Image (cartoon, rainbow, N blue to C red; front, side):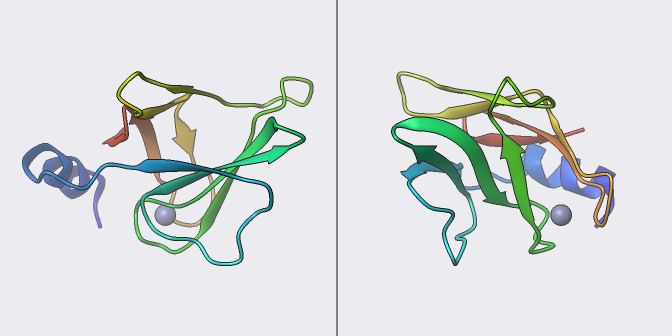
Length: 107
Ligand SMILES: [Zn+2]
């Protein structure tokens, strides 16, 4: 799928928004459109999710500031998740996107 097509689709098609889930272990099976926030003793240390391009690869995002690069997340009052900074796969599908308020914004 070309980048332009992905952008076109996200502009004109109302896609289901991403939800988030706090988990204590990295799940064995991943559901699409779920951002799993993995915690250890209530400390969120990693985010795992399926790549939104449907390539079926799992993305691991480190949340520990002590070990850069790291990401941060925000959950709005409306329970929508935002990730900082953008996510860029440099292998495979090479997807580059932002997740803002539960919505994927392709770069
Ligand atoms: Zn992908």
